[in-house]
Length: 335
Image 1: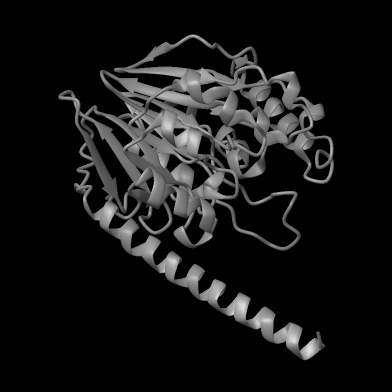
Image 2: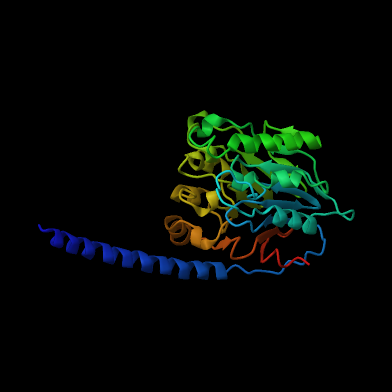
């Protein structure tokens, strides 16, 4: 077979395949829009009333999630800061975005923000990068901080290259400077937080996942009120094996914050089947979600998906009647 004939055969295979993928992706967008349109979006008054809400802030492809219940507030991850060791050029982080949001939503009459706790789910900068700025602000008061002990053996390859130890050490120094109690033996038992019940998962990184990467250390958070619950999956993925270890223990949830920003490994057929959520939130823009993950969400799990970037942040409110209400454009909606 000549070279020309081989190229012709390859063309006949590749072009139809690319066309199929293109049309399949268009179909996923159309179906995704249909699924999402079925979930009503309600305006959020931000009138100071004490409600039970999970605020997913718009910090691009990074996590900053504010829990609010009956006048209590807590921050799960902080968004990416301005000094990510992985970035070589100038980069503007989300310190001002997160701090501004906290002061507008969670401040008391004296202008002080009081957080019952902060949690760093794992030691990647796109999750804990803004904590230095938050802990340096005297108007933000933190009752306690949850950070697992950093174990370099979990991610031997990129520990030094990504500066994980330096970032972790800096936060611990900040906590000591503010005399904020540090909890490193995370509780595995559920605990009350306002009207919510909160439970941490993966409080001790399994030794069999050492070497799988820092995402294997991710602490998942289940938030429950009555019969409704949400799971904040940090960077839990199937690629590290962590989702497989946790899915039976977590069980059904109504809202799922996708792990790892919708990147490769953020879901699996088993994960979606066992958690069986009704709504998904992704801390990213839709265009950055890996196609195979998006197709799994849309065609298999049939989940309405709300991205924090296109929606400029998302709030899920838990009603006393067992209802769930969604709000978008939450940053611009605050006066």
